[in-house]
Image (cartoon, rainbow, N blue to C red; front, side, top):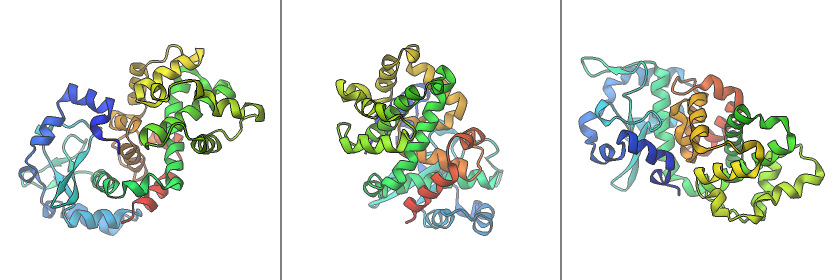
Amino acid sequence: MKKLSDSIIFNMLDKGHNIKKPILEANVEEVRIPLDKMSSTLDTIKRKYKFALAKFILRETMDGNIVPIFSEELNLSKAIPGWVMVENGKFKAVINFSGYRGLSLDPNGYLDGDPRTIFSLLQAGYLLKTYYEIYDRLVNNYDFLKEMCLAYVKLFTRILDKLFSIGLNSYRKDLISFLVGKFFFVNLVGKDATSKDLNDMVFRLICVETQEGLIEEIKGYDELFNKDDIYGDIKKFIDFLSRSDETLNKLNFTGFFREWMLMYDYSCNLALELLEYLIITIAYVAVGSNVNKGYVIDKIVRVPIAYNKISEAFRT
């Protein structure tokens, strides 16, 4: 499993915002929001929210496995809604509700704010916790992974299209999309970069209109390169893309990452490197929260289909 500390972007955020140390030193019980201080919102969720995961999220919240806190001192980036800890052999997700627009504690300690935002953050906690619990099953659920791959490729290539108009050449777009899809499976999911079966699957998933004579050329494009130099991390991959096509020769990680943040919101930062945060990004949009730029993502990703796959995979 790829860890948060393996993420280049997380380590950048930690260097700039000092995230890791406060998390490790946090006294969760001191800043925990008692559930009776959220009772009105939880009742609204129970009565009105018909999302497929709602009853599971409520169950885990009421059982104490999703722990809501409010701490401005923690200074977490919006890209990190919380973290997972182990208590008595069980995974628990701690979710910090401070720092989100419209959410606050009133003088009596009650959590005020849009129920949809509160629900989306509880959902993020449920997805984080459950991700650890079902990881082995999840990364072998290809029906689920294929939809996540499609979402990732569309989000990634939309940035490249904005910067370099890759859509003007169908071969170039297919080749780049294939490489992005393979990066998803190798780097985010942990699959073998040398697998012919993986090449075939990614090609069938991504390159649906490729001309017959170009199929083997695209599938074999990365054969002459060291796979770790391509798929080892997001910086290596973007550097490889910049060398793979003269159209992309001005591509660099800093510029790409800046455009990613501007287009999707910095709450989506970790979705570029970590599968669990890609899942959370899509789930935010599906429930209509204002945490990220859902109105943009919804035009790019098949959100209802992707969320349905997430819901099917994460029911526990």
